[in-house]
Amino acid sequence: MNRKLTSKFVIPLFLTPAIILFVAFIAYPVCNTIYLSFHSWKGIYGSPVNFVGMKNYLQVLQDDAFWRSLVNSFYFMVGGFVVLMPLSFGLALLITSKLRGTKLMKTAYFMPVMLSTTAVALMWVYILNPSFGVVNQLLGFLGLESLQQDWLSTPGLNIWCVVLVNEWMYAGYNMLIFAAGLVSIPSDVYEAAELDGCTGWKKLRYISVPLSKESFKIFSVLCVTGCLKAFDLVWAMTKGGPNHSSEVPASLLYNEAFTFKFFGKSSAIGVLLLILGIVLSVLVNNLLKREED
Image (cartoon, rainbow, N blue to C red; front, top):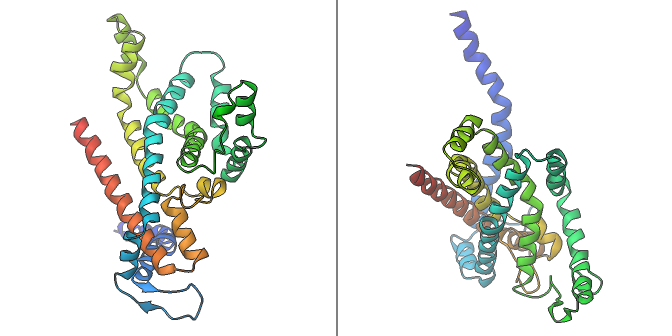
C-alpha cells in the first residue's frame, strides 16, 4: 500500500517539470497565436487588441504572396523526395557497407549538419555570387558563359538554388535515419538471400528497401513538416526576394509580424501552417500505413 501511495505522488512530481515546459513553450504560445489570429494588434505593449473576426484569415487567403510561398514549400517537398531521399539512402548504403574508410565518410557527410545554418547560407551566397562566385567562374573557365546566372536574384531559379542547398545540408542527417534502419536488418536475411542467388541490385530491391519502410516513413513525415516550416536558410540566402519569388510561409509570417507589425495576420498564417502540417502528417501516416497493410 505504501509503495502504491508513494508512486501516486512520485509520478506526478517527475511529470510536473515536463508539463510546465510543455504549457509554457508549446500550449500557451499556440493558444495565444490562435487568439491573436482573430484580433488586430501592432505588437506594441499597451496598444489596443481589437477583435476583427475572420478578417485576418480572409486577407491571408486573398494574398498572392501567401499562395506563392506555399508553392515554394511544395518545391522544397519535391526536392526532398526526388533529390534528398535517394541521396540520403545512397549515402546510408555506402556507410553501412564493408568498404574501407566508412568512418571518414560518416564524418564528411554529416559535417554540413554540424555547421551553423547561417554559415552554410553565407558560404553558398558567395559560391553563387554572379561576379566572383565559384559557379560562374567555373562556367566561364569551361567556356559556358551563356549559362552564367545571377543565381539568387533570378525569380524561379533562386528558390531551386535554396532547395538544392537545403538538400546538401541535410543529406547527412537523413543518412543516419536510413542507416539506422539498414543496420537493424539481420545479417542472416542477407546470407539466406545470397544462397538463393539474390545478389547486387536484387538484394537492394527485395530486402534493403522493403525492410527500411519505417525509415522511409520517418523521413516522409519529417520532410513534409520540415518543408512547411523552412525559414533560416531562405532568410539568410534571399530574405524571400526578389518580389516574394523565394518567399516561404515562415519568412512571410516573419515579415508580416516584425516588418509590417501585422501580428494578427502573421498569427493567422501560423495557425494555417499548423493545420496544414497536422493534416499532411496524418495523410502521410495513413498513406504509408495502407501500403504496409
